Image (cartoon, rainbow, N blue to C red; front, side, top):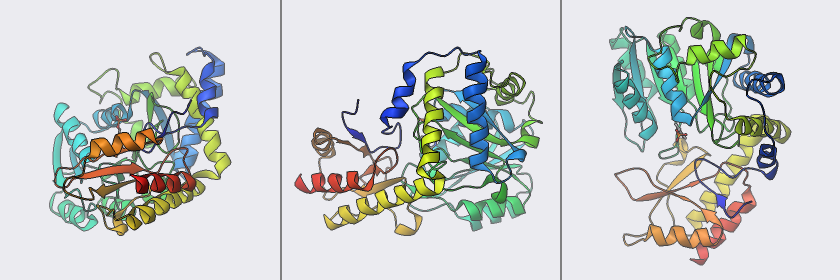
Length: 360
Ligand SMILES: *Cc1c(COP(=O)(O)O)cnc(C)c1O
């Protein structure tokens, strides 16, 4: 069931036990599924996300992570609101594309892909633009692996009294985040990233008092976050339309395994160690990282091509034959490839990877 390890930003390598739970069928509107699985997940997500769980609520949504980003922006930012997106990579830019589709009042604040979003620049912009109502930012920009300084960005946004929307797709569950203490209003992530489930749905964790005011804002039926939430609340775990039952059951198992590992802090420590072994090993072979260490997340790492004539396609195939699947780069200004350190992978896997790269 594991032809190779996925060292990618998702879908990830998952455990046999997570995959094994998908071998049974569930009824999408039966209590065993709604209350025994969906509601358990919703409560678990809120407990994981916030030290004050009573102030927050979780909505699950069919589709990949982008569906949830779109559902959140399209259901929370109203026609008279003004959105500021601080972007330093493809996922930040994608939020701008969604805003365009929905004809939101949106300003993009673009940073270079190789630097972190600057809280000072966001602060200055907010000082000068009182019309802004919402600020959206990506926590870990998976494009490069930059971990944006969420604490400081949140402090600035909250000091200006704005609503804060965070795409924490590739960090939630693998990097500690407390929505309550940071004042985050909306957080978005998906099943197949750091919680180590399989792909098929995403989720939005929202400040309850804010979501309650979003009735009728959505411009899309399928992606109406409020309506999906209301149905889940009133129906105790009911989805509006067919839910990915097997995937949801697997996600509950993945959440249990995260607990057994010791929670988000323990998982973060494993990812950090994976990343340390990877970077030390690759540097010892002469590979350089794109980012300075201060901005680097433990989630995914970009490496420069080692030489001008480097054949990435051949490198990729040779590593795949040795049991490792890596990822191409995603930026225009430099030739890079990426290696993810999240999923059911451990430091020994990265020792073997470095050995395999050394043999090529
Ligand atoms: C994975 C990811 C997404 C969602 O991508 P999908 O392909 O729609 O699942 C969004 N933002 C970030 C930062 C991501 O890493």
